[in-house]
Image 1: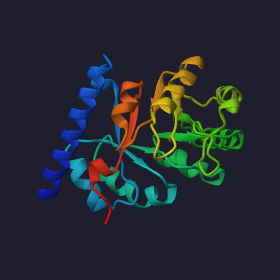
Image 2: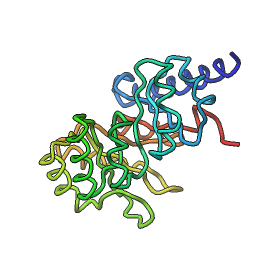
Image 3: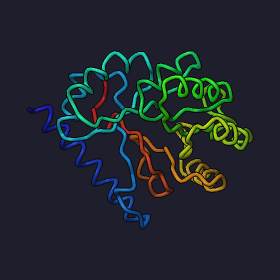
Length: 223
């Protein structure tokens, strides 16, 4: 019960911050989807947040998600789990079977693997294209210059692309990167933006984020 109360307090605090940021941007708070990032969290750590009624979660790894979410889905109705981490092409079929959305489509080979998996399983799931917005060699995401071709390839393969995703460089002001992603999405007619985490989601909302990915602020620091 104590864990559920703490989870509810954290969730309420985040929702208040979302509402405040949305109001400043003259947006509706309900237009922002809060994805609770539950990577490295056990099922016992996740249940208190599920007990509050929250139903949208994000995971970084296919194997980790497969180990805990099928059982949790049996306990809780209408749970939606998004893959927000990098995806290997050989894990595409597992990902399509397990997740309700993917936020890390970033290369033509993955388009082919996901399309093949979706055709085989008879299941279509939306895939955000991840853009390497800071041109960082250590991060995933397609190059900005490759975005038009990747959008076209996904469309030709029958993959729904609702929007773009990014992880801006750390320790710098994220606003210019969020603004650039918003411009790129607008240029390509894509309405959704997956951007903003625990430390910068308010800035992301002010610049158009429709999906924010929050972990630490909801679950607390990892021990």
